[in-house]
Amino acid sequence: MTIEPSGAGAGMQSIAASAEIGANCRIGRFVVIDDGVVLGAGCVVGHGVVLHAGTWIGAGVRLDDGANIGKQPMRSASSAVTREQALPPARIGDGAIVGTHAVIYAGATLGDHVLVADLATVRENVTVGSGTIVGRGVAIENDCSIGTFCKLETNAYITAYSTLEDRVFIAPGVVTSNDNFVGRTKERFRHFRGVTVRRGGRIGAHATILPGVTIGEDSLVAAGSVVTRDTPAGQIVVGSPARPWRPVPDAQRLENQGWET
Image: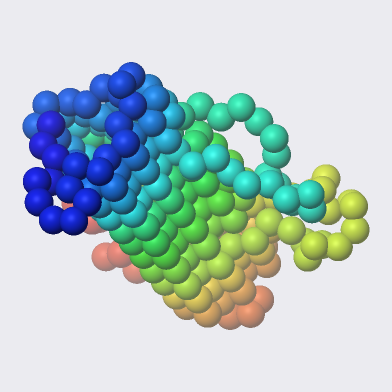
């Protein structure tokens, strides 16, 4: 383990005696590593990073300045989808990168080589598959499943109880929703439903997806569309409300990208 050696505050870490720090780790100043944390070999931990109790970090992980890993959720008296529960520690796989001031909650699991960019948030009970990119300012709410090799671009919002399968593409500013009652009546608590994006589905910039909608496998939602019903597989949908327009061109089909899918 290497501690940053110079400058004001050098050596001012708080590292619990029960933490396990792997070989050849570099740890910056003002870092907090709580009880039971496991930090794999060859990790780089920036200044001001907080690793909460029990957090498990794989080998070769980079945690940039101010990242907060394993934070417990907050619950207000009027919260609709956050519940009191015992959460397992956060887990981050080998070779992952977590950006500056990103927050990964307790109960979240990131696969190998995931990138979570600056200011992004990954809530509790979320899994993110290996190779996925979570862009700057993206928010993934609680109880979501994100597949492998997905791309969620800047400021996208993934609502609670959503599922994104493998190779999904979410463009900047996409908004998903899970409450058809828009915050009114007690009845809404019985009907929260996130969105589902099937394998290879793509959603264009600033599109809005309504609660419970399924985006079909390898389909494409055009930029700015409002999707009120399920989309057919392999089709482009356009408009508000979105309607089928034409098939996805063969050159854009997932099966023709030369990837291992």
